[in-house]
Image 1: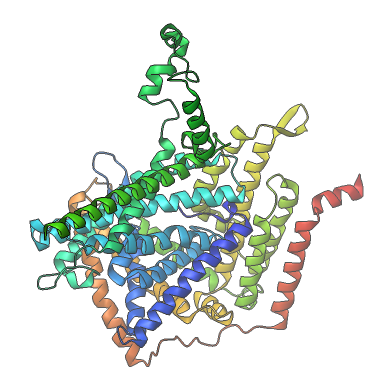
Image 2 (image 1 turned 180 degrees about the vertical axis):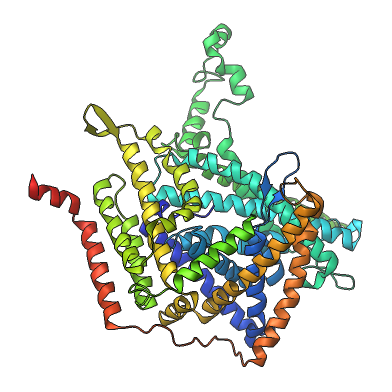
Length: 361
Length: 266
């Protein structure tokens, strides 16, 4: 996924440099703040960061056989580094890895370094850690299986989910950056459609490899891993903030990513009623989509109001039905609307429940 | 030869090239770095159909290679990392952009073909420039140059330390891979049953190594920043060379020099 300089326009590359530099600046600030608070000494942390970054670089040279395929996978550096060093130190270490790959191996261009840092380090370290790894590791998931088993399962889940999600985000960013640069003639939707499935498989394999390493580390030296509660440490319940963060990732992934593949063909009911017009079925049944249903002044008025107020008719932007982004946006917006509706229903239910409880008391 | 060994050889080859002596090597690292950045940004900014204008940009790295006494072909081994994604994007252009742009004899050349060639050339030229920078500049010198432009010391120190330990760990990975392959002949990679233990054991040793490294650095008086040895100093000649190169590169961006030369004769 390392982008070459040729794939970016200077304006996009400069923007990505600014974004990545900001993230690096925040990371350095956070580490300095931790040092000032006496949490960790940066001069002590530096060799650990460097040696771990070198290990990730060297570890990516190892081929892991994927059973039954004959091909091999590699380690996902971002997730592993943030699980060991934390997201801020992990992000800086990933920058070091990417700089060395770029300068000495021409793996990613010098101008594209900002974009590569964003696509591979930012998502892996920040999104992967804050929205996936930490919420999962701090949750009470699988608690019934005992602490050790639960921690192992959570590590596996966090690694796989983290690698898949962050690689999808990275691959999506590559498509966005290349399209914004005007480099490819490939339509954005097609480009995305090519990038995401490939990186879904890669993410899954990388997640499994990362999980295997982290589980080994947990068994050997659990204190090296962040957010892992060992025996004797109390585990907090999954906080509302963490739950919302996990849900937000799932909404964006499912609503945004998978809705691109949503069929533009009519759904079962639509197809059954109008879709097979060529076969003469609709005519035979005397059905016409425009005229179907009860026709009255009130229903016509209601139809007009609905058309005027729906900004994503048929799951796309109004006036831009060909745009696949419309489907993506509508996927996300639709999911959010459903989430809001669910929250309103829960709120109303809770209100009446509390009222009843008050009355009973 | 496994990947780790190949990477080690690559690193060694780059180190040997950077330690050579030539007029280009003697330029100050900061001026070389700025020249390279300007060249890459300008090259990438060429329009997708501006093939003739772009072609002239090859002149700059070619001159650089001559002054550095390095054969141009040396950098082409790195193309294996650049070409796949560029080709994957570029090769599809002729299918989506079929509008004819110009004719060569009786053959129509479509915009997609031109944009594909332009894209590939940009990839090759940018690679040539960044390779020239690293083949003529030691990493210590580059980190010192980055410090001069206020790159945070934590990042430069981290890059330097990571680079130093990369070769050590590559060596270890190579030994482990070799030992594993001797015990599992005919197997392509690491079996799923050993995925965790293989790298995990190295990781544990690495964390212990980090402790030793920290103690060794503290004993040598490390206080958060590396003190670089006096390297190549900035000279007026370096900055003059950088100024002329940047000026020429920017001129070549706005004046189509091949077309201008042609117009002089026809």
